[in-house]
Image (cartoon, rainbow, N blue to C red; front, side, top):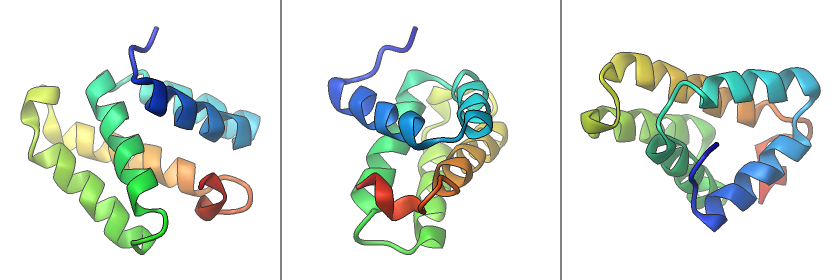
Length: 101
């Protein structure tokens, strides 16, 4: 059971509703490998960036966020890879990433 803020829970619900079954399964698997704080950060950065940043810039911001917070995970390179996989999967949702707004 995730312990996310109401905002993050709501946004994650939107993401999951828009995901195809295979994407939802992949996201669930990926999200289960990271701490709730990382999930919160991914959602916060994703939604803050929707109208401001290019996708590559957003992914870089997420990677930098993971790299600067090693207390969130014992293995920062793995966390960075996982975060990149999470965001790439989210961005591949039907209709594109801007439909999440």
